Amino acid sequence: MENNKIFISHSSKDIDFVDSFVKHILRLGLDIPADRIFCSSMEGHGIKSGEYIPDRLKTEMELASIALLFISKNYKESEVCLNEVGAAWVSLEKTNVIPILLPDVDFKDLGFLDLNRLGIKLNEKKDLIKLINDNKNELNPSFDPCLIYEQIEAFFYETVPENFNGEIEVPKEVNEWNECFEKNLIPFDHIIRKAIPAHEDGIHMIEDKQTQNKILKELSKAEFLRTFWYKKAEGDYYVEKLKQTPTGNWLVSVFNWEIKISEMWVAKDTEMQYEFILFHSEQLPPFEVDSDVGGKEYNVGVLTDGTIVSENERLNGYAIINGETIDLDKHGVEPRLRDRKAHWVFFGSGYHKIGFNPDETIDFCEKLDKGEIEVNSENIIKFLRSLRNHPIIIKWR
Image (cartoon, rainbow, N blue to C red):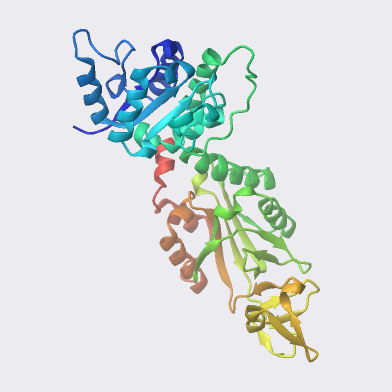
């Protein structure tokens, strides 16, 4: 039999608190069936009349994948509860023995239990959310985050003492739904719609330079850029940052890849995974190196005053300028690079179709570069429809 039961250890004097936790968090919030939950003093989840208690406790512990210990002053005074702590330690991985401190005790009160590294104090919603996320594989890896939030509110409404400040902000849960939609697809969708509000859903060629820059300026402020990708024929990397230069070009990523945009296509769609920015980055000339090395290079270092040094000097940390050796760390040197040829480039997250299918997207960019595919809305949408959907998109659609 699979070890997937949830063993709940608590003092019988705390049954109201535990009963609310089982009802709102485990049953209604996480959609865990009753036969996976063992709680000795709770009807439907405990020991049947006539059963030998020690044997039943031993069996349930052997079938458990996680033990939740509801620690209170009553718990610490109960010999039965302390025996259950010992049994949990012996039967389960230490990380799967989770102490949950009720409002009347604190970590300093644990004494010999010494479980503060793994436990939570159950008076803040953020701690309960962390408990669920940290142990979702043992509880329910496919729970509905919207549903659990509702039940967390209901649980705290029932159990938090009246003198406790119940106006705690529920933090954004770090889960697959939140990462996909709240942190990537939805904010990117807002950026596109804000930039081109007069356009209907679909794929649009953005010819106006002002609108192109408006889109990138809005994108440059986005918090999700560290998980946002650019993909082109020669590979891909995180966008990470966008910064416009005085010349009107843009710097992308920590490498300060410099791009000059001549053509841009943008997709806005109610199926947000289809959205993207596709642009043509023009070929740029190499940099003129200002240090005594001289010459022209596509990869260089740029000091805060604009002085350009060679890539080797940047990597070595020193440059020779007018016969003097300069410590580049003291001058805030940054990398800067330009491509030797023009490229078509996609911007999108790993949840967008063009991000989730990197090989296909890179291959498509290569065909665009070579002129094998004409750049138009019909060919782009045909390409998008050929790509796989991200499993999280499918799950939460």
